[in-house]
Length: 76
Image (cartoon, rainbow, N blue to C red; front, top):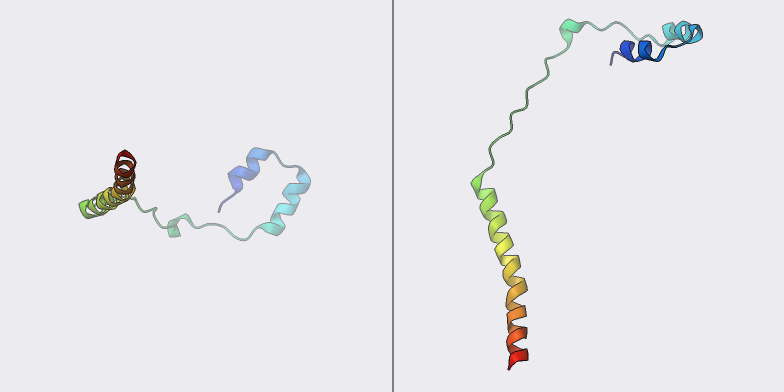
């Protein structure tokens, strides 16, 4: 990563600027940097929603059926 702007924004001392040469790895050739891909989200598949909906209904029934049986037993 090119940290030149970050380095300049801080306002380093002359000692830090002298040390900078020892840490220089190289120059960045901007023509070799690949273009950042544009993310395009894929539309949601209806089968996934159907699966989640059926799972929700099953869990709901697993809760309410025993509750209804218990309520019926208490009522009797």
